[in-house]
Image 1 (cartoon, rainbow, N blue to C red):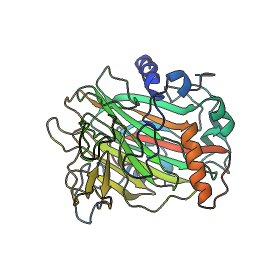
Image 2: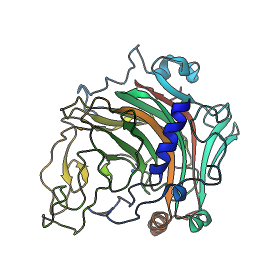
Image 3: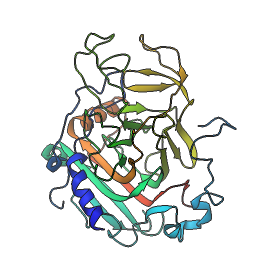
Length: 383
C-alpha cells in the first residue's frame, strides 16, 4: 500500500486545480469562471459534468467476460470483491480501511451507519458542504481516492443519492490515467502530455443531467469556434484556455432523494489510433456512448453536441471520431476519485438558476454513496 499512499500525496496537488465553470450555457460559458486552486484550499485541511440496437460497441456488450455482468454473477454483491476482474470494492460496512485516503472521517466526508438510509446494509458515505463552509473556503473538495495497477479498460459503478434540493457539485467523480510516475489529474486550463496521462470527470448539472468532462492531449480549446487556440480565429474570445471538453447526451434527469445506480466505463486507445471510448449507464440503461463513429454530432469550441447544435457557428453533424487519449501504451487507468468538488461562485449561480425555476433551495449540499465497485468489465447495478 506504500506506493498507493505516495501516489495520493502526488495527486493532492492537483485535486483542487480543477477546470472551473458551469457548462449549462452557450459555447464558451466555461471561460474564466473560477480558476486555479491550491491544494490546501481544495482539500479538508483539518484531516487531511445509447448504442443503436445491433451496433457493437467497444468494451463488449452489457455482459461480462464470464457470462452476465458481475452484479448478475454475484447477487447482492456477495463475494464480488474476490473476482479477478475487480480492482476495488467498498460497501462502507467495514470502515475506511479500503481507500488510500482518507483513512478516517474528515470535515466534509463521513461514514454513517443507518439501514434506513443506506442503499444496502447499513453503511454509506456522506459528502456534505454548507453555504457557511463555502463562505469560509471558496473551494472545497470532499474526496476519497484509491489507486490500482494500470489497466486498459475500466468500469466504475456506484450508487448515489442527492437527498436535498441544492446545487450539485461543481465537478463530481473522476477517473485518472497515467504512466507509472504521473499523478497530476485535475489541473485546470492544462493540456496533458499524451505520453504522461489524461483524466475525465462525470459531472451533474443543476438539472440533474450527467456529462463527461474530459482532459487529454488532443482536447479542444474554448477560445475558437473550431476548437483551436489561434489568435484571430473565427469566434475568437480573446484568451487561450483549455477547460474540460463536455460530452452530454440526451437523457432524462435522474431523480433527487432516490438511490441512483451510475456506471461509467472507458477504453484507452491503441497508440496512434482514435479508438478510445467513453460510456455511462444510469440504472443499467446505457445513456452516454462516445466511440469511433458514434454518435453523430457537432463540435463547437470545447463541446461535442450529440445530434448537432443550433448556434450560428454550428456545422452539420458528423460521426464522432473517437478518442486519441494517449501516445504511449505506458499510460493506463490507475485511480478513481469519489469527489464532490464545490466552488462558492458556481454554487451561487446554480442556486439562483434553481430558484428561477421555482425551487426552494437548501443551504446544505449533500451527496450519499454506497456499493462502489471498480473493475475491468461490465459491473451492473447491485441486485
